[in-house]
Image (tube, rainbow, N blue to C red; front, top):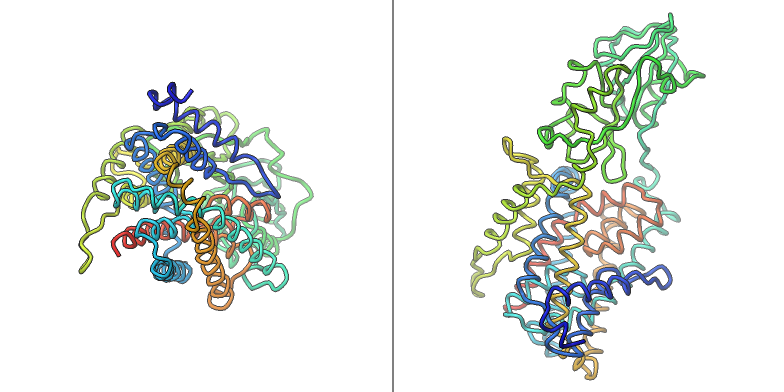
Length: 527
């Protein structure tokens, strides 16, 4: 079998992926290795036979695709969070830099090589691109992978416990952020009882958030689409969409909740979700669709990554968004054709934008950055594509050239890229890993990794409560984003029933944490 696999790298790749993903799916007390099981499977293969290692080009390809897809997806939310999330981001950056100093000190104390120190940092903080940067800096040395493998599992377990503690702390001693639970976008049919002099456009702004108006039924029973200059009269019923608190405020302002549900009346005005697959609208705003002028229609919600958001005029659309549209019944077919409504668009990887973005990212990653007294370092084949992906993800498009990826396509590329790189990295260090297991070095690396991860978790938990005044879901999201560990994110979301504050905390700090770890890992190889 070894002879068969050794001469066929593609066959070897998929054998490692098949076994690794099967092992990674096994759960013990709700904890699984996830993608990291591919790394350990590759380690086992290469330990059994040193020929069972994948070519470097496969590892580089997987890593670059992974980092770029993450950047493009996180770009819009990352830059938006910088306006309001400077404190959490600065807290994470300072903590990760301090952990780099701590890891360097531990490495000196234990007499570790520079590669092992860098791998210890990457493993304890569960960051595969940082491992890749260290491997490339050391021309393929196995030391980083060995240290990474020894410290990785402890990094997962300790951070899972920290996220659980944060959630329980939020329940027992809630902060203001924990009490202010976010509300989903909802509908409300309001019976107008007060004679308001405000137009629909003026009523859209409430102290508790924006509200959109879909349709209204006048006192005579005729249903029409609401326009910005529509004045609601006593006896009218109007369908409003927005956060629950904003809808309650608006209801008190206009009258009371109606006994009927206007959205159920679909004789004249209908509604449906339509997949945005028309490429000319990628990166455009809801206002750019011009639905009302063309069809008398209105977008009310956009579903993206399993979450509904209000379809405000300034919302930037992405490929594969599912737009809920209200329109005159006879116009709905035309609206669907106008927006595309093709499921094929949700899987479009946008080959031109992807190739150009990766080219720019890899070129940026190859540029040397001088470090006084130490030589030079590079952003590398992970941070370079990540930074370019963040910038292009925020831009959305340049003229007719689209940079964004549908959410489903980005998720697929992210998973494939990460798995391919892990299969490569594990295959370069099998024999060294076995040697470490049989020596005192292995235990030293395990314990050192636990120290680094525990300090990481403790600092963020303490600063999160004392400085950010946060606990519960948002702090659990910050913990998982700082650790750049999807398993911890999934655990926190499962425990909170997918509270959106978990995802917001994760997205706020994840890209910065990724870049800092990659740079610190490279610095550790130079010390």
